[in-house]
Image (cartoon, rainbow, N blue to C red):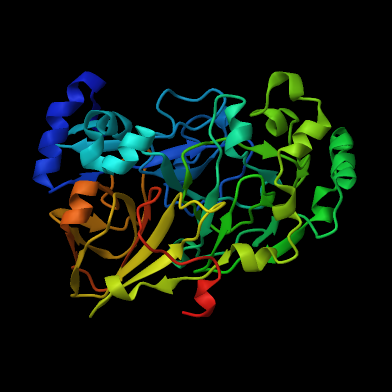
Length: 416
């Protein structure tokens, strides 16, 4: 399928109105691919094998697909639209970001648009052959020092995209209780001596398909090699604290890229950006591990809606995600209190008038029928979902801040 012609921002309004009317507020999105020069693709994104280096070998392989994103990828040498999702309609395409600017209340709801003036979250598939460096994402106050926003995030490991474990199906998270800042400082001092030994201060957890984690900002984590669905705040800040991964050097610049220039050698400042208490929490798993919880109010005969990413970050509801399964021949009307980004991970069917089809293989630049944006207007009115295939129709969708009047807390799966 040919790539649709991009529209300038000034021309978005007329096409957006027609697209909203044609599909009752559901917008078709095209795949958004993001490379990382310092990582090794896991090759489970369903991207055609010859296309993983479509940006050029110097940019690194494609190991991420971003969903309903209005957030730019913070890559060196990036393209102008890297990380940004496109809406496609009748052979034309335009940025979801421009659509939100044009009709924010209709797309993302009055509350979110008035408070943030943008869609402040996004999600992605994150897929690597092996582990990535032990790193953290800055909190909001620290990120503000360099004109950015903080980045809490959450994980879910969809079984449909995890046919194999790849090289290291474990994630190091946080630091061992009792770890001192002097021990961590020594790791930073040893940066140029090869492996700085930071993983000796941490603990790895085996990753389990169909489960997830909530990772607050300032918490160290070295994601393992399961493909991960990651609802998160709309930011791409990070700081790598590990100097060597699988024999590959991690440059100091990736530790300090989102810190003020005059602090790049200030070890106390760098360590101070960590949320120390959360890192050395002796009950880390109890406070961060997630298992799906059925939402009985949104489930019925032939369909089940499950919470997969939930809970608050420092008391705030910033994002959340659900997994909807519709059995063959069944249909349902989905009513959500706010907009969501939707990705289909298994089966075929329709959402409203738009077809849904999980692809077997996607060529770079090709349009697909697996991703949509359910606008606030459509979500609150109700969207009909039908499974027209012979296997379960399974989708993941994520929401923005303060959408749900009630939502499970971390740990609630034990009592569900």
